[in-house]
Image (cartoon, rainbow, N blue to C red; front, top):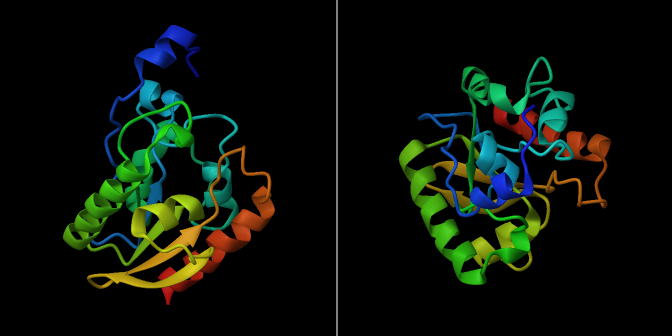
Length: 181
């Protein structure tokens, strides 16, 4: 992986990262927002400490561990990636509640247009704020967007110490099973 300087990363602030998306996916994963390394590389979940890619593989969604630079291979598995908030920041706590709510509105429009079977939001706090559901827990939600069901997954950031890669993989696997049913 290319080494980025602090200046390189700071230059990526507010940059947008294109979605990995197609119509009719089995699961559209939605991160909170791109981090600076993701924005600098253009690859979702690019920070080495982020557990998204290992957990995706451990849960059975992918037959092998993909690298962030291989993100477009997800489409062949019926998977995609977007974000609740499009702009890149160093940390999610730099986002405002208004950005989350607007991001939730835009995400609903994307899901209604693209019609994935499941929308999987990675981060319960982000989901609660974006969709105004203070009681949401990890797992399937009552909310549907058109015909798309919604599942909240734990945030795979290395900062989320409440969940190990193994326990996250169990929750991702629950969604995988539901997406195949």
